[in-house]
Length: 260
Image (cartoon, rainbow, N blue to C red; front, top):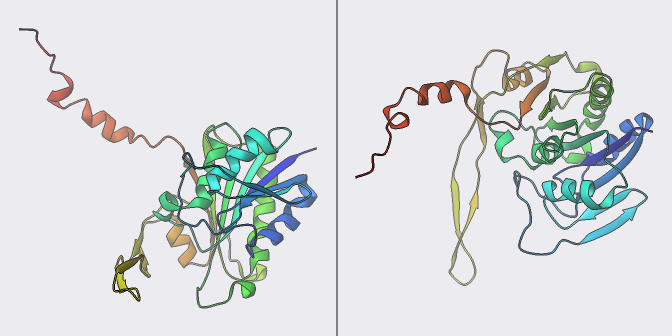
């Protein structure tokens, strides 16, 4: 039987988790290994200097006191009886679009599987943050994810490549299309909010509001702005091959140290 591992970065209580489990259960044996608490923007952090705790929350359902990458690492090396056929991370509350990808725990959970040769999909719902999580259209993203899982199981993915999926928060009948896209650029109003605690000590909140997507043709941001779901293949190899070719023309790479 096909074995599917689900993880996320929103944690075991995430609103996006039950719809995803429901959508993928007809496709195989579903396992869930997710963080015990919110772990957004953890990127690919692994917990190396303190112990992890694992809590069994149900049949084939575990919570881990760590990051999304910790969860997949634990699942693959300890908790599952055998390797899964595919790993799905999500459904994240909030898009992981453009440079969000580099900060995303959702994407990192999928990448942890990708690094060891397991096909993976990261899926996020691009939401209006003023709308309560219970009111989002999780089913739209869950249904599309099930379709993509079926396609990946049939056709596979390129080695060390995953699919990063972003879905607009609309009813299924209002989803205009699914677009194959590149990674774009997302701009934020970056700021540091400084405050004082009751003892007069400063503390800080990082982050800022979304400003815009750069108008890059066929990018994930452009697709979301048009009401499309975006599917972006991303890879573990971060080498810039054009830049590497240019490096070879620099003198420093052609100068030999001479012994005196």
